[in-house]
Image (cartoon, rainbow, N blue to C red; front, side, top):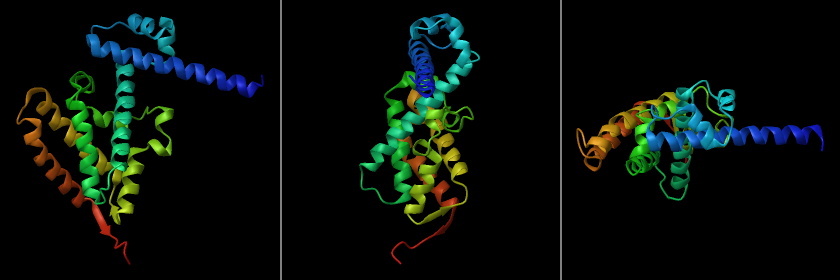
Length: 212
């Protein structure tokens, strides 16, 4: 076996341990709550030694932060995949579809919503974003920019626009989903989508006629 193959195998093993810890932490946090779970329990569920935990994470808060990063990005990737199965052409409608998809998934998984706790934007913009999420195919900001360009729209700052939209949706829908406050989610959605459309329009620099 070549040194390159050995290195690849080692990297694969490390990635597996990391993912096992993420999955174990997520399952235990959902089952028991973050405060009730010990690092020893997480390590045992992941099938690794307790010391291995500290090779990847500083503490439980760091683990939770990286779980939010992973789950948030996976959720948005699923939403984008669902969008690609539709015939929605207008940029505003595409963005609303994605946000609607994300909100509905969280509405049907309240325990996961409590773990994320209004921090969807933390997941997307986390500076510790994992290697597997930093590829061009997984870049949500890049996907937004490409979608706008295909619709003939130039945005002032796609990153800031995405941040504002996600912050707005996650912070407002959290209470709607869990407590039906100030409104039930279905009643609140039209207000949310109207605000998102206004945000988008405020960030458009120019429109290009793609038919010319």
